[in-house]
Length: 365
View 1 (cartoon, rainbow, N blue to C red):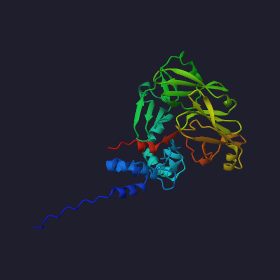
View 2: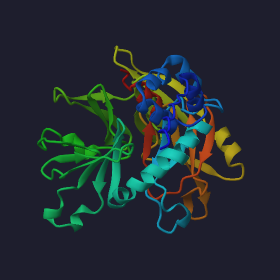
View 3: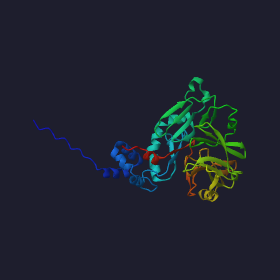
View 4: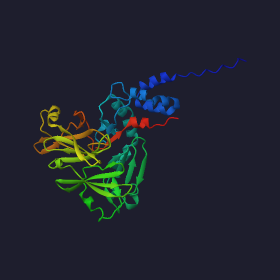
């Protein structure tokens, strides 16, 4: 009888070699390796390694800033991209393109099509998307228990709620109140998403065609308030509320002469201050040299804590202003750089993924 074979000795790769493999892979592999081993997670979350893999250079595997893309349903006749529910808008770096193409877009295309077919997005905040069922009035009352859906595109988790018919409803938000208390709601500017900062919800309101103000609601204390806008915004084409990377309330003002001003609000008593004024006409002429181009701000033109603004170019034809077939423009308000992004979907909702923050939030043991 032959002697039993000796067991094959276990071979282990040294941590230095494993880290080198991770640094040369992609963001998805990095997250999987960090979840597989406590020792490897500590090495991956170390500041020197994160600085090596998280930057804007060509050899980065984790985008340094938030990856922002279009969460949408494709037109049914667009056969080549019928399965794609997420496409990149910003930043235009190899790491962001790889993350969207190989990780985010395939995952969301598997789990999101049915949700985006039945629901339309009304607001995005904190990595979650608030969805409202399309054409709810066509359903029986007994079938309206899931008219509202809160969706997490990163995990695919969904929570369903019945729409509160007895409440006054704003896009993405519903608060119980009486009509006398909230008579301002009929003046809601529906081109803006609500902005939430430090537990306070901000809505842009229309007092008249040329007069606006901000309605605030403190979620913790249930107190409402009112904020005035800077006086220099009068006579503008469009305005949008947003938040800056520092977490301050921000106002985007698109003027008649194709310039964009950015205002920041300080709660210390100084009020609104103009952060920057960007002249966009010359930049538009470089992108569209032979067109008579105008601009408009889409409903979802910016995202949480970002210095990037989305613009929609308009071309003047014989029948009036029409949307340019080349898609949209992305403007970096800090650098003043403008580039085109190809998006022709039926629905335009911006969704941001802050991968560096998610990685840094992983616990080590």
